[in-house]
Amino acid sequence: MKNPAVKLAVLMLVLLSFAAAGCAKKDKTDSKDKKSVTIKGSDTMVHLMSSLAEAFMKKTPEVQVSVTGGGSGTGIAAIINGTTDICASSRDMQQKEKDQAKEKGISIVEKVIAYDGLAVIVNPENPIKDITMEQIKKIYTGAYKNWKELGGPDHPITVLSRESNSGTYVFFQEHVLNKENFDPSVKLMPASSSIAQSISQDKWSIGYLGLGYTKEGNVKVLNVKKDENSPAITPNHNTVLDKTYSIARPLFLIFNGEPVGSMKLVYDYALSPDGQKIVEETGYVTLK
Image (cartoon, rainbow, N blue to C red; front, side):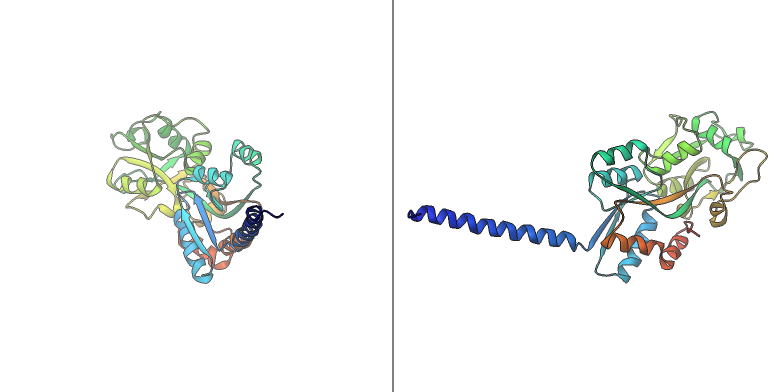
């Protein structure tokens, strides 16, 4: 190879190859040593996950955790698309979502970290104290339009719900409405806190949200009866755990494969005594 120009070109190619290999090695190392975790999903769980993340980072400052909401459906889409490390979900994944994940080579692993009771709430000035599952269903499917149909005063019912991308919405539709459609008059709200604030200001409204949000506004939690002949049950830690309260559900963290590294540290902290104490302090129900 006597041509100097050719020699120079070959030398440059060799140097570029070494540089590329070095960059690839560095990227792989950076990925392996990743010290940040993203959690995305359930608005119901945002307060819980933010509190857990804050306490976890104080104990493990070398790992940064960021938490965003958007709804369980949004979080599940993110874990399927690989745009979040952990999905927080207030519902189990649907079969079609599991199928989508499988098609993309995502190995879904769901872990329960807490339980939640869905509270049915009204304004404190509403005289109604107890409500049956059937009455709730009739309100949300449009069969009941006035409080007098429940033995209350003659006022139209303003009905509030979470939006359809919310795991709370999906759970409520499946377990309370028996998969029937919400009435078109139902007002869809972007967050649980929005429902609480609206009911604080509207004397004749009704809504549902996770127990952790019942202190977000000036609201009254209704006691729920499975049917007319059953006792009225108040949602709380004990009635959710012993399953006497009718509208309760597990809260999940969803991973792509068994959690490892920083993700496992976050998950383990959620299950630890300190983590479960935060679960209780934020208004949710511990695993035991």
